[in-house]
Image 1 (spheres, rainbow, N blue to C red):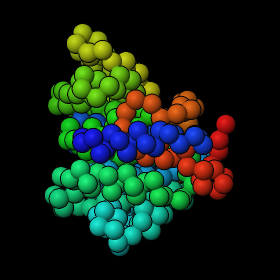
Image 2: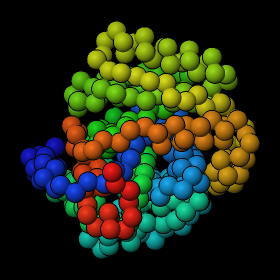
Image 3: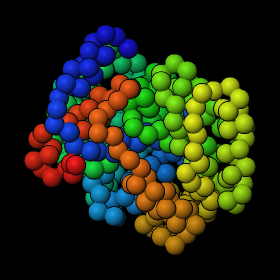
Image 4: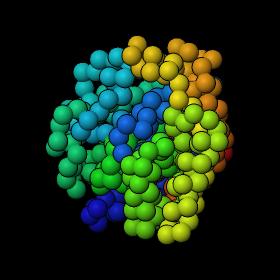
Length: 295
């Protein structure tokens, strides 16, 4: 990133008024591990507990959050970057009243933002007025600069991994990059599509055997989401399993994960990473006037 990007984040740190907003990046290294499903179901479960939840579709070139929910959108992040509208104006409403910032699909230019466009994105968040309690960032697959930027910009990085060699290898590569080059040392792991709790723990052990040996990173297993046909049925119906099949194994596990995540501590200040939206969410006095909790 350029000095512009760092200077913008540093300038935001000078603001004194702080509100606590939880910011969680959901990532996975490779595609097909179920991170978008986990993001949306967590969001709905959190909203059902009375939280104001915003989901940012950060897969800027191959967005699919709106498709999974069967939501038609007229505008997205590309319109925001062109200055045609604000973030508040592109937001759409999803299940349980969650708010969603949609990205674009099939637009390669959105995956290759210039330094000036990065600054425009920062500015867009600095002007956002919608009050929220939780921001869930659904990143793209892979280890692109944008994935790394959004991950390092969040308070918590939730890494979704499946019991496949490529998933484990790609999750390790992501953790390695973030810890060695971007100062992110704490990761929460979700073992997804496992047959049993034991299988999930064994999957976590496979990952930590490598990270403990080669990396200075702390990994915590926070959920084992079982393989569940009901989740696939919900996807086909463009619905969320926590709403469509609330008593199914995956729905129960995801609700437990959401409840656990809501108890993760939020910092008094944005520290360390390039937390451009965290800085804005933590510190904007206007949001405090609209009722975002502060302590």
